[in-house]
Image: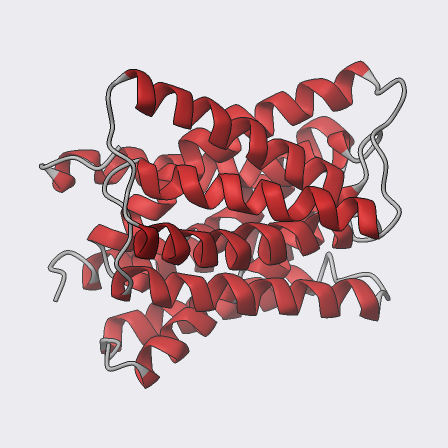
Amino acid sequence: MLPHRPNLLLPFCLAATWLIWGSTYLAIKFALLSFAPYVLSGTRYLCAGGILLAWLKWRGAAWPNWRQVCNAGLIGFLMLTVGNGLTCVAEKTLDSGATALMVAITPLLTVVMSQFMGNRARLLEWCGISLGMLGVLMMNLDTGLAADPQGVGLMIIACIAWATASVLIPRLDLPDGTMSPTIQMLVGGLVSLPLALLTGERFPDTPKPEAIAALAYLALFGSIIAYSAFIWLLRYTRPALAGSSSYVNPMVALFLGWLLAGEAISWPLLTGMCIILFGVALIGVAARNKT
């Protein structure tokens, strides 16, 4: 997944993180009809990581050294066990659009953390991030986050964990190529499933067909394709561009909610979407030449 000509793959990786990840919030909702949150998260990443590992070993990929495995495991724990796991827990009470709106704070957290590690954000990046947050606030005038402080608190922790991992990835010695997200998904799954058992979660006896289909979609498209694309973006582009999916995902999630679940899209939502798109464009301009 990590090519020698990154400029050619950039639009495809952005499309994967913007569009596919935007659809995963609704997919999680469908999967939660039968699967408990950490059972869902653990099964998703263990299956995806196992498939990728089998493919890599079939191609003769070498196993990385122990330090690289530990570093990749740390990223997997932060992003997948904490970040995605808590997102699944929050979606039990928050709707998919509201959850996606909460995730939009992640790029701001990422850039702020990068500031403390010497990666100074450019003016255009700050402008783009500010516009993105303004767009999210505009959308919340219509949608709003449900009166669920526990769900909101879980999403804030999830966003902090994801932003922390995003800042660490370019600074850690990680396995080459697709082996890095593979180990991250394996660790995320291997930690999540015991956690599910410890918290009383169990596999369903007769899961609904739509929940099974949603789980398969999350593993194949949300994890193997989109997550690998995100790791590539973090290693080859600036943090603000890699995290721009957090601004586009709410638009996709809200559109799918309108299309498939009958949720209304009003003028505040449309205005917020336009502001967000302009903010993402500014981030893209600032990220053209990585420093």
